[in-house]
Amino acid sequence: MEKTYNLGNSVSTISLGADIDTIGLAASRATIYKDGSATAVAHSVDATGDIATQGIGKSNDLKGSRLQVFTKIALTGSDAALRAAEAEQLSGTYTLGGGRDGLKTYTHSTKDYVDPNVFLQFLVDLI
Amino acid sequence: MKKYIIFILLCAAGRAGAQVQNPTVSLKDLAVPSSPAFVITDITPTLVQNPATPKAFVLGVAQSYQQSGTGFPNNYSAEFTPYWWLKLHSRSVYNAQGIHRSKRDTTKWVTDPTAGLKYTSISTAFVNKDLIPDTSKAAQRVFAVGIHATLLKIHRRGYAQKLKNSIAQWHTDAQKEFDNNAEMLDSLQNLPDPTDAKARERIYKKYSQKDTPRLLTNINALIEEKPLFNLDLAGAYSAYGVTDQKIRTGRVGGWATLSSYIPFSKQVDNKNYFEITASARYLSDHFQKNDQDQIVRADNTDIGGKAGFSFSQLSIGVESLYRHTKGINGGSVRTIGIINVKLAENLYINGAFGKDFAGPNKLISAFGINWGFGTEKVDLP
Image (tube, one colour):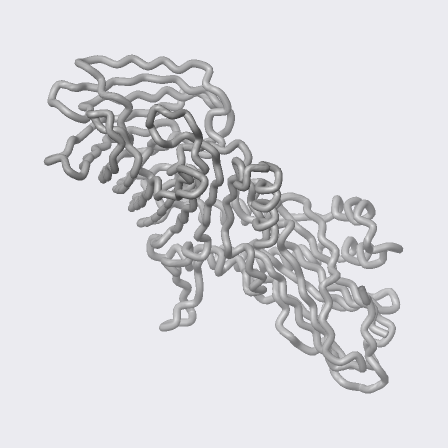
């Protein structure tokens, strides 16, 4: 499970997309952490939790930073067993592009179920 | 009522009037079953497998086959929704709830009345059971398969827009939550080992929520709102292995229920409705004993309707059923009034009074008390 993305030395724009697969209510935010500061670079625009593929910054600006995509999912319904089943099934797929690694897809987000919420965190070091 | 009656503390039933007919069908029996394969074989499996993948289903059947040692899976029951087997990556709360932007006016949201079709479920059962009412007590190898679908679900005007607006409000507030929890998000990404679940759990305890839990409660109330019209269908087929070589069709059934719910108020948390339900069932049993003790095929068609009021503490209504048996001229009708009262949390009284099938003087009256666990409201049975 690779947790880095090689940006290369160009000044190209790095793109990010997130696809959250759930029937719950989802909200996502992408943040760049660098030198002790945090900058929100993208977010979902509706409760799909998806982040449409978009530029998150220039390659040389992002070098040495860490990208976090954090998603909060609220599971609907009164049946706890169904909520638990959905918590098990839901997932996130993340795509980075524009760097030396080209278009690269990741699925290694962590998942934490705190009923009725599920939190997904995707982390990747931009090198 | 789901999860209803863990045990019955007391159930007293009194029947008055002239002779009471042998057990007869009730409207509840006509309702579309969620697991028709189990209903058609008269089984109530204690363990129903819910395979999450086709592979898990095949493995479950194979394992049961291997364990039985008889060349037939023994007492294996499964229920699954093929939609959950598909890794579509297009799932979202919007398509799950069957709402989308109107094609004619993209500023408006509408419901898709057939959205429930994707949750069509399949039930299967392999049992060794004596379902042929002959003198032999030998069990047959019974295989049954059933399908259940919600064909139509029509909500009241404005429902989709209201649900979409509530969801949008939740999303906006969830985004604000990220601002308020910036410190927590920072410490989360800064963990020495981000895969340490216990460390993450400690951090999530600090996650502060403001309005999203209340909005989620509102959205759940909207999702649970009863539709204006609902049409459920089910079908089932069973085959009996009467000998090692002979397989015969056993029972075939079809069910349909059309319901309409009219709310008493427009409040989101409204639980009071006027309900009208029409149900129909066709059941063909190729091995039924007739009055001459002969095993013949019997085809029954039952049609019923129910109307009543359902409040949080009380439900009251009337139901009428018509039964037609193929080969017998005319049918018989049963009409009863029903009442359910919630006396206290988990303590219910129910009663029925009316005219039973066959004959003008056959009356039925019943009274019962149920005590169970749960917080369900009183519903018409």
